[in-house]
Image (cartoon, rainbow, N blue to C red; front, top):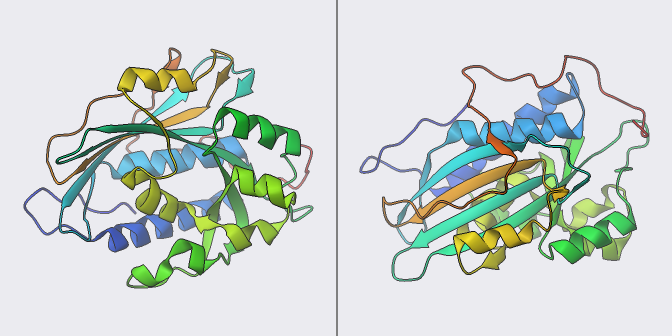
Length: 276
């Protein structure tokens, strides 16, 4: 269930309330996906669509500023030989009194396999390539069970009701490389995806930054090295005028917001085969 749209001038929820609402929706979505299609593309598409369906989002910052977030999602329509992360989060952020900020965050999605209980489908070589291209990239880990994450990393004391479990967590790629494990031990260094979106990306953190919107295209090395999905977020801190649009490489088409929940893959059971 999406949060109600709040118009400017009305009561605007706190960021903590927005975070809790998003995190609960994400966990419910992934719990349903276990019974439908436990595949990275389906999971990532569903997560992106959930965020888009909430737009525009509004919250009140700790400073008392009203913040608006416009969200659009795009899918790569071409043939991608090598992905530059599964999801690119493209952020333009406007804050009164300072220049606009433009940056990208990359999420490399991996699901946990029920057959092994591990994240089998990434390698040290793959992580090294991702880190070389995008130093701030994160692993986005999908789990078919609740994740007990590190609350110290996630600053959970700042929310009104603690979120003790999630189904999607993020870990920095460079940290995952240093640990050199594919098990749930990664969760000791993780934060919930909802936390990453609300407390990091929406404030310009963990992004590869550029000086202008057009410079954003430089982070996409070639037509054969692109993300599968792009989430474009325009964030306005303390003002009703959204920041400038950011161009995307050719080959990305907007995904229209459906009236009903989208089933990107046929209904089915959890896929246990690690090599699939």
